[in-house]
Each structure stands twice: as structure tokens, then as C-alpha cells.
Length: 268
Image (cartoon, rainbow, N blue to C red; front, side, top):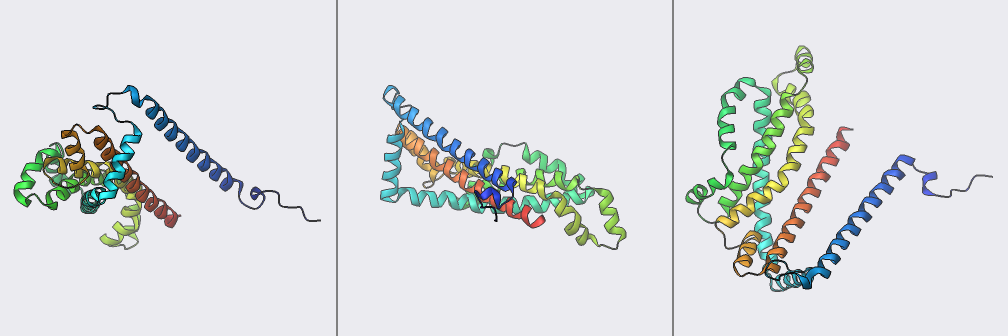
């Protein structure tokens, strides 16, 4: 008589089942820790100064008010647009220039001191200049975000391209590969882990760039809501804005993790 299948472990790879159990444990742990922290915060709420700390229920009420009157959607859209456009521009330029300089040492020697000089300047210092150049519309916030993202992605890509096995490059060159084929077959695949790391590390920096731009000059966006709430001594509004920013960071981080996983799956 055939043995009865008693569990899913009998029909799938035990390693897959173990990985699934681990993911379930991690997810449950995150939920427990988050809920416990919020409950402890709520219990301590009556003993905290409302001008400094608002309890979670007050923050939830503020978020509900913002959602009800359209304030949240309007300002969230503005900040998300700044982040997405700035991230795309900065990441694209960072990957392109990083691969170029990592592949051609002469070009790297020319531009390296210039880029490092710009990198050493606090990006907030460029804010007034960008406002003079581009006005007080969306553009200066996007440019600040792109500048911040650019250096994280560029430096990671540059180091990844430089660390590619030169012996492998010589082999493909002896096989008749031209410059573009060397980049496509060796440099880009070899630098891909570093590129993905740079893209992931740049996510919180994109939020920082957008919020810094909004704090310098803006009448819309989550950064503006945080600043306006602080000027009104509304700690619930400040914390509500910060929670929205954390949610945005998690969303963009999940998107990059998904893209990274898909890329690893294709290479496998």
C-alpha cells in the first residue's frame, strides 16, 4: 500500500519548507514586536507631555483627518513624485558613469577628484543655488534628490566595475570581443551585485533628498506637513508625517528587493 502523504514536507524540498517556516517566524516576530511597541507607547501616553510626544491614537486620528480631507493624498503624491523622479535620474546617471569610469581608468583619473570634491559638499548647500536656477517648483527638489542618490549608486557601481576580474576581460578580448561586448558580457554582470547594493542603499537617501528640498522651500509634500505641524506645536502631525515617510521607505525598499530577487533569479 502506498504511504499516505502526512504533510507538505513529504512532497516538497525540505529546504523550501524550512525557508518558508523561517519567513513565517520572522513575519510573526515583526508583528509581535511592532504591536508590543505601539501598545507600550499607548499605555505610556497619558504620562507624556503632549507637546513632545503624542500617543498612537492621536497620531491615528491625525492620519485619518488628513486622509479624509485629501491632505494626505495630495502631499503624498508630491513627495512620491519627487522621490521617484529623483531616484530614477540619480540612479541612472550613477550606474552609467560608474560603469564608464570603472571600465576606463584614464577617464576615472580625470573625473575622480572633481566628483569627490562635489561629493564632499553637504547636499543641502546646493538647495539655494538650485532654487535660483530652477525656481520654487518641483524641479529643485527632484534635482537635490537625484544628486544625493547619484553618489550612492555611482560609488557602489564604480567599485563593482573596478573589481571585475581583469583576466576574464583579457580572455574575452582574445576571443574577439569588442569594447561593448566586454562591458555587456563581463563588466555589467560582474558589477551587478554592487549596483543592486547601491540601489538599495540609495532608497533612504532619496527620501532624505526630497524632504530636505521640501524643508528648504515648498508648500506641498510630506516634509512640508512635518514642518508646518512643528510650527503649530502639533506633535501628532509631526509623528504622522514621520510614519508616512517610514511607510514610503518600506515600500520603495520592498520594490528594490523584489527587483533584486528577480534579477538573481534570471542570473540563476
